[in-house]
Length: 212
Picture 1 (cartoon, helix red, strand yellow):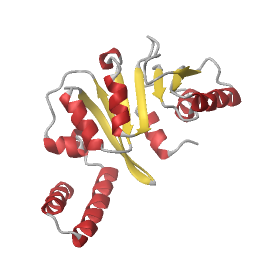
Picture 2: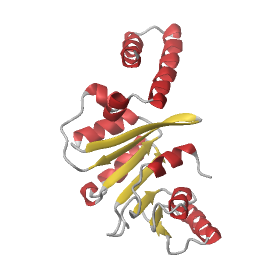
Picture 3: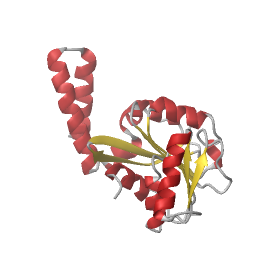
Picture 4: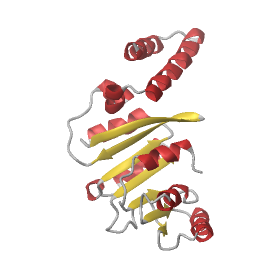
């Protein structure tokens, strides 16, 4: 079974599309997509020989040859023309930005990105490129993770609040998103008790307004 984080990503992928998973980590997501009939073909990309061998081992053990395709690639440099959807998950913001800067984003139907750091900077990047955020989900998997689906379709820049908290998340206000905000609020209050600063007070008030 895959983690809740990867399961959430899998649930945001349209059926029967060809996916390229950048930094595939033992090909767990590609294997799940194929074995559950979501995709017929998934590329599992890795930039280093060791991780690529892990992908190859997983493919062999599960008998997924021809369905999960190991690719030795720096980001999307070796992506085939049949790729519809790109997944970039479990990395830091700067790595994700480097991958996006190094590819033709408009070539793909959409991206699913999950950054372990600086999610607001990732949204700001998407906003500055005038891309469209089509969907967002918060998932709890020991930590709270945010998964963003975006396409190269043109969109006017997002507001500061949308960049900080997510345009779709703010609109939908689902249970997991609100729980994430409650968690952030409690952490901020603890920090603010130790070192009172205007920036902490401001953010506390900001989150309280969203939760109410």
